[in-house]
Length: 190
Image (cartoon, rainbow, N blue to C red; front, side, top):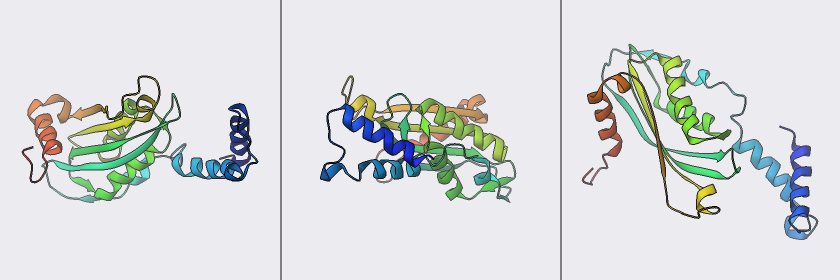
């Protein structure tokens, strides 16, 4: 990542909106923005396959679900954040992966300029490529600040996207089981 270019661009934006980039409160802002971009866009150009390279032989043939994985990403249209939860499920075909790897996969693919629809598909496709499961499903629910704080200005509206592969796409009962798992809330009525 080119920190100097980012810092120059931020100074130009500050000047363009009528601010003084040399005033006390803004003096370190270009550097802080460059540091922030390096952190929140750390997934650009990185291959997600290594997260699914270490698997374990296991003859479990039932659904495995990890839900409520927090995610933060930047909308590529307005460069504003969107945030929410990802839910991932798969049916193993003799190999399983550590659950933390599903969260790491989500994190890596979120840390780039994204649209939610593509992010959802990228996670599902990485699971298919890395694990070769019988099937998998990914659902993401997120609030987009480009809609909440500008344009239509509707905070609290959440977009839901899904990507179903293999048996999750082909079998309505499998898909329904996955959806029931991600809707169930302990202590609630589902």
